[in-house]
Length: 518
Image 1 (cartoon, rainbow, N blue to C red):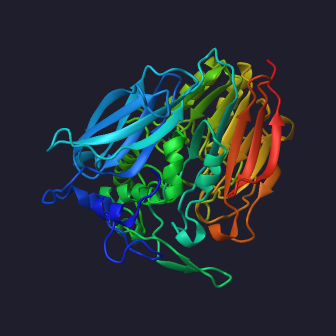
Image 2 (cartoon, rainbow, N blue to C red; image 1 turned 45 degrees about the horizontal axis):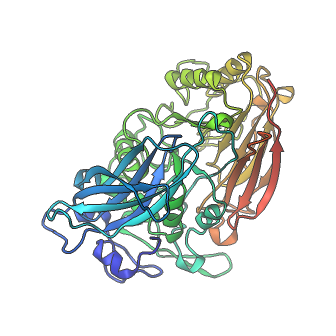
C-alpha cells in the first residue's frame, strides 16, 4: 500500500530515462492522457489513496488510476473488510487527470472505518486493479464528548528542497502519522508550483542534496498539466502516501499553489512565465487542487467542520478574494483579504457555534509582518502598531463582533512563515482593544526552506511567547527547523493542549489552555 517499486512506476507511466534515484528525471502524469496509448493488463492505482473533509457521518475518499475506469470503494468497520458495503464511484477519465473521489455517507460517528479502493476497466468489465487500503476516523457526533487530537503544518516541498531519498524523503509525515491524529490540517502551500527543482544542491557543510525531479517540477507551472504535476510529485514520497492513507485531511490553499504572493487580477512581470495573467494561472491551479486533493468540488473553499461538542474548525480562504498587495494602510471598507461574504459568514458561524473551542485556520498570520518587496505587504499586518488600517480592519471587525456576542474559545492556527511560534494577543497591550484575548500558533515548514522570525505588529497586542527559527534564510530540511503542531482536547476537562514539534516529533514547547468559561 505504501511502496511504489520501479516496475510499478513503469506500469503507471511515471518513469522515463534514468530511473528512480537521486537526480533522476521522472515522467509526466498527464502523459497518460495521450489517446494513442492504451495500457495493457490490469488497471493500476498510481498515487495511493486519501481521505478528507470527514464529518460525523460522511467522508471523501480519493484515488487516481492509470487509465479510464470506474472507481469502486469497499467500506467496513472491520480491518479485514468482512461484510463491507461497496460504493460505486465516478468514472476516472482524462478530463480529471484520471483522479476521482467518492463521498461516503451514512457513516457512524466517532469510529475508525476501513476502506479499500479499486478501479474497474471500462474496456473489460470485471477486470479490476489490485486494491489499495486505507482508513479514517469519523468526527464525533454532537453528543459524543471524547478526546480529539489533530496535527497541522504547511509549506510542502518549497525553495528547491524536493524529495531526497538520501535524507529520508518527507519524513515529517511519518512523525505526524505516529501521533495517530484524528485529522490533518494543511495550512496552505500544499505544493510549490513556482519552485523549480534542480537535481543537486550543495549544502553549507559541503554535502550534496539530491532531488528526485520530474518535468513538471523542473520549471514554474503554467499549464494545467504542470499544475497537476506538482501534486503528483509530492505523492511519490512513501511517507506522505502512508500518512494520507490513514489520516483524513483538511486542506486550504495559500499562494504557492499558484505562485508567490499572488492576488486576483495581478499581471506578472516575471520572465519565467509566458502566461502573465495570474487569474488564468489561478484557475488552472485551482482545478488541479480540486482534482488531486480530497476536497469537494464546487462552492467556496472556506468552510466549517465540526468535531463533536468540543471543536469546530473554520477554514479560511485568504487568497481568492484578496486585494492587491500595496502599503496596506488604506481605509476603504470594500477591500481586504476575506471579502464581505466570507467575513459575514465567519462572524455568523462563530456566533452560532456551541463548540467549546473554535479553531480558525488562517493561512496568513494576523500579527506577523510579511512583506512583498519594498513598500508592499502580503499579509494582514504592515508593521504600524497603531489603530487598524488596511486588511487589519477586517480582522478588527470580526474580533469586535464576536467579542460583543460573547464568543469564547478562539484559537488561530497558521503556517506560511516557515518557522514555529506561539503568539498571545491581549487587548491590554493593543492599539485596538475591543476583543477577547486569544492565541495564534504558527507551525511549518513541512518540507521547505526555513526562515524567520518575522517582526510582530502591535495593533492587536501580540506577544511572542515561543519562537523556534533557523539561523539563516532558506535553511534546508537536512538541518532541522521543520515543524508541525499538535492539538489535543481532553474529552473530560475540555482543556486544549498545543505541542509545537520538530521533524522527528519531539516537542519543542507545550502549553495547556483551560476550557473557557462563558
